[in-house]
Length: 473
Image (tube, rainbow, N blue to C red; front, side):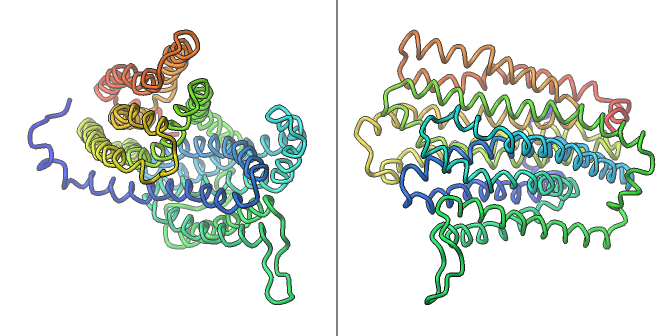
């Protein structure tokens, strides 16, 4: 595979690396901004009390679950559109974009309809508190429309990412964030100037109103950017008659598109549910142990965004290369992506190592037992980025080469067949300590690393013009 000698001199200043870095940093900041929006809403709602905060937590968990699936579908479509960009085929890009739009919106409409018809039953399954149920339902009455806007905006973001214009999505989030914060505050508490009431005081529902207005603004911004793109480039034309001039052909294309991207969505959904199961299992530990893990999870998610962004940018570049049939450097580019993923992971480990010395200052009001639990798991959350980052870049690169189902099988086996049952056994039967319970997460990544590496070597070695042709539809 890769020559280890003179890595930095050979690759650090290469066009591939520079381009991936240019793609990656807006993607990483996008993810951080998305997380910060939820944190801002939480801060704004917290003065309303525990019931309102719990209501928003339940409602946003439901909406975030749906949006996570939409994002996964869009990420899969991003690879298809990237190959079309690489092929410089206007028709392929147009069909890929419309197929992605149709699939994502149909899925969104299905979830929206489920919420419309069964949201009361769903909320009742989560909480039996009637007062809490009413607040959750009031929030969902507004927030469920976010999934419709999100279906379109995620596909447009994937389109711009596939074109290498990741800064456009970043600008969209920069516009959305302050609008969301300002309007949420105005509608939560009411905005009054003198004797004139400019906005009603809606309580927790105000956060949902702010979110839907903000995402609508982002939707308009991205739409304007698409129109500008259409005027400035002959590569993209979003005219419906072009995409659907042969309905049979378009439906066949959409079917191939769906077959490729749905394993991505299933994979992300499975991993997301797995994280929730881990959380439920950790809740069976002592309260101090559970609090320690809960405190570190947001930091772990934030720290993981940089390696995830690098993996996404690598997948985009490799997909474009496959679309353009420039396969001569495929092996070198895959190896560079993996090596730099390790470098980024080590930097993330250093960040967590420094963070471990400051945890007590960041959370100054915890009990000594909680600080002890944080110290116990410190070696684990410091090590985790290395193995998780290694697997993340492998997974994205393999998806770019069409191995979406294989990636799903490795993740499913590692998480659901081995790691989660083992974690449950350790906690529920052996009454294991927080160290061994939390150590299951890096253990999961370690047992997946071998299959990922083997499959990546085999995929790169065997990849041919015929495989590139098969993926270009």
